[in-house]
Image 1 (cartoon, rainbow, N blue to C red):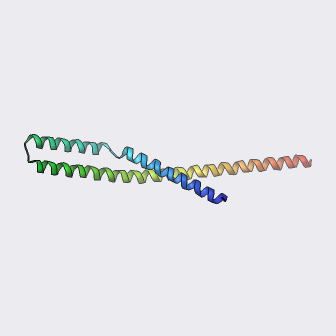
Image 2: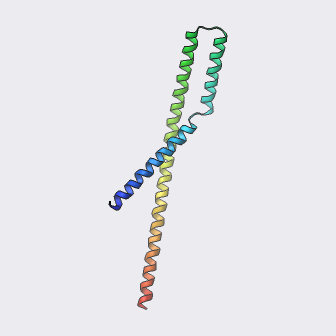
Image 3: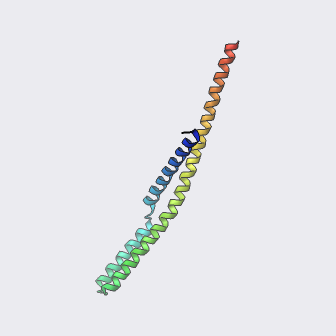
Length: 124
């Protein structure tokens, strides 16, 4: 395997890791306070309608529509958060890669300097 392919494999693996982290963070924060409040409001409306002896077809229709609305809003929010977190993870990945490359360059320079100094000492 050539060095270029290895770095591509590492980049793909790191990108998958960034994607996974972004997905986990988005799913953890998808259910915001607004969505929870909407769910509780829906529950309260359904309970009030049941106690008022409203027809079950009307109550069930409202419950289903409310739950669909909660799901749609949660999913939309999750997608937005995922995109945001994914871009954040990718930028972190790029920064990490740049820092590693910089460290490697500095390390190579110090090794090169050590070899150069050793050769100078030997020639003296």
